[in-house]
Image 1: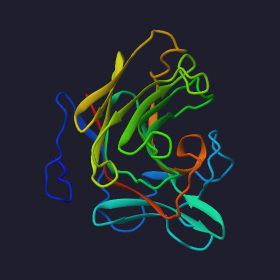
Image 2: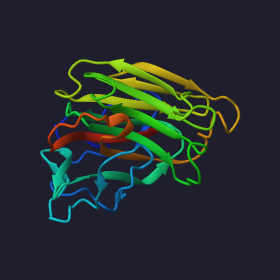
Image 3: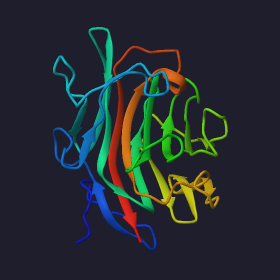
Length: 249
């Protein structure tokens, strides 16, 4: 049976695909930990980030990942001079497919919300690959400018060779937009609101294409650092997710 989203609209399936996993965030409260797990800790996460990620609740008891009205809100807050936020991942992983989320980002300076993928059997970065479906950071990319990128040994940001594209869209932080990746054995195509804006093709070697292995999905709200930037607005910052859907052939 085709699941219907909480707003009553039938889930639109891309041509040639079928829905294999979806999270509509239609059950109020905390995300389902049978489907999601949290990464925790500080240390900059390789990008000089400021936040400390928690297992949903801060030491003071504030919940930072909460579902209400069919929307997941991820918050970054300050508590006792420490910034706390969320980095949550799907327990399932997939190789190839159409990966899609409807998201509303934030124009808070310092905030860096993302929707991305990492390999299930991770051993080394960037060698095993990283897929960034959506990143937004007003502090470094500018207002209403979203980006998609891939990283691997041949193409990565420390070397300045990552395959990336920044797209201007309207009302990124005041309206929801649909961000998607179509990933096949031959290429990746990244979409915003159904329009392709970055295509990355299989280079034939592991250094250029480690993307023939299962990857899992990630939602996080980073603070500051290389992409969040040095200008920091007062917190809280809020990143909202309407749904996450996975389709495969």
